[in-house]
Each structure stands twice: as structure tokens, then as C-alpha cells.
Image (cartoon, rainbow, N blue to C red; front, side):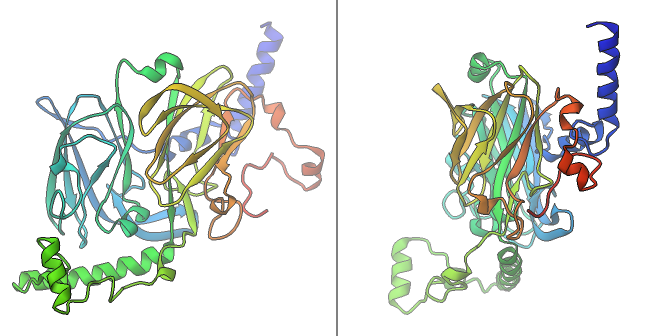
Length: 396
């Protein structure tokens, strides 16, 4: 590169850095790093990695101007990312700061059955103010997640989920695709009306239950818990009405999501995936919600390299993939087509904010080496009086 070209390039890059709304500005890229799960640092206790998680009621902002009360690990949605090495000894000290019951299920991990977090099957629920200690060895390798397994219909869509990544120095995926950067994207769906109504109702029920327990008036039928199936059947035969007969909800009252999020945010606050020409990136996809997503990347094919954390012996290429509830998938994107590209759910009902398109599960793959002149306004934009190529559209 000669001096003239160097000066020209430097001038262009400097101009880009000074544009506050430009996707490549320092301000935008710095803010973007905050839109991915926050790593949770462990405390070493001998050879054990010890993590601390708590759950509390939290007011969460999905997009500017819209907040709702929800449940969150360590006051963040998604919860903090736990990242360990395969074979590490792990201890998670879980504190319940709410007036509701909770557990943690380690989705995809091979933990001892008493650590699996299923209430009344592997453990008693962690009641208000209580702690529970989970201990296990980190297995198997791959992309996994954790979530509450009590009141799951409410608690997961409220935000009680987080990524759990188990690494291996002998990474089989990096061997095939030497990636330089990686990103974690956690998808979910939320019915803000259901969350508000059901959360209030559950808090009232728990107040009643806690009072009855404190006064020694615990009753299996009132709490809907039985020691055996036979005990339950006998109670029904004697006139007991199970909660699904005297139902708190009907089918029409089940969640009808009106907000769709990636890492707890809806467009335009969703994260960008940054890449450079010739670079390879790894993207970990986690479906922590109850809906299916059909994720489509414009301008590229990507490699599907892991399914539920398990490396795929023969990766294959695609540009649209199905991500079902509870699934994780790892994809590799190769920087072969410079530009700004949409990565979104092709079921466009999930690309909405409270019914308005565009919104929801919409984000961008952004090339960091995109020349500024490629973003210059076209004639129509200039006629509209725009000074920059707009990055945000809220109503089409």
C-alpha cells in the first residue's frame, strides 16, 4: 500500500469511528459486547470451581420504553454464562431470594441424578430464603444451558435460563474450522400479560402455603403432593379434586407470546455478530423457550457442526435451520461475502414487538472491514433528508 492509499484508508476508517450511529464505531461495538451472556467467574476451593447463583424478581427492559417484572438469575437475563473445562469439578451454590419455589436443571449435562433439579423427583424445591448446593463433574463437552424446573411454564419464559459451556483444549470443532471468535445466542419467547398475571397469582398462593406450613397445617391435598401414585389415586376415589380439574387456567389462557428475544433483548436491541473477510466465527445457538425458530442467514451458507453439544462427524451446509425447544446447535460462519447481513427467524410472526414488524428475533452479521463508502446514502435516501444510512427501522 502506497502513502496516498494509506492516508485515504486511514481517513475513511477515522471517519467511520467518529460516526456515533455507525455499526463500526467504537461506541456501538463496545455496547454490543454487553448484549451477550456475562461470564460468571468461579472461586477456587481446592480443585473445585465454585459458582454462586441467586434468583430474585427483577424489572427487565426488553426494548427502550418497555419493561416488565420477571425472574432472573443474578439480576440479568439471560443468567450469567458458566464456562468450564470438561472434567472440572463444579459446585453451584444457589440462593432463592424470592417468595416462590425454584430449582436448577442442568440441561444436557450428565450430572448425578440427585443434582438434576427436578422437584419431587430428585430433590425438594428450594423454598423462599433457602439455599441448595449442586455438585457435579462437568460432562459432556459442548453447548448446554441451565434453567428452573419448577413452574417451568412461567419461570423459563420469565427469564430463568443461562448458558453452560463445557470446553476441551482438544476442541474437535476448532480442528475442522479454526475459528477466531465465538458468540452465544439464547432464544426465548415471552407473554408479558401471562407473566404478570401468573406471577402475581403464584406469589399469592405461596403466601398462603408458607403460612400453613409455619402454623403446622401442611396438607398433602392442598399442596397437591403425594408419596405414591397409589396414594394419589386413592385420594381421588375418596373425592379429592386435583388442580387440573379445578383449574387455575383454561387452554385459551396459556401463553401467547408477544415478545421474542435474543439474549433477553428484542430488535433493535439484539446483538450484532461481527466478522471480517476471511475470518471464521462460531455461533452457539440455544433455544430456552417453548417455540420453534427457523433461523435464516442472508448472503451465506453456514456449517452445522454440533447438535445438542455433540460434534457432528460430517458437518453440512445450510442457510436456514430449525431450532426446537430445548435444542442447542453450533454453527460456523465463514467470512466470504462482505456486507451487513440479516440473521432472523423466517417465521416472521417471531420478528415482531408486541405484534409490530420488524422486531423480535432479528439481528445482523456485520463485516468489520466494510468500507465506509459502501454505506453511503442512495439517491432516494437523500431525497428523504437522511444524513446516514439508517440502522434502525421500527415500522415497515
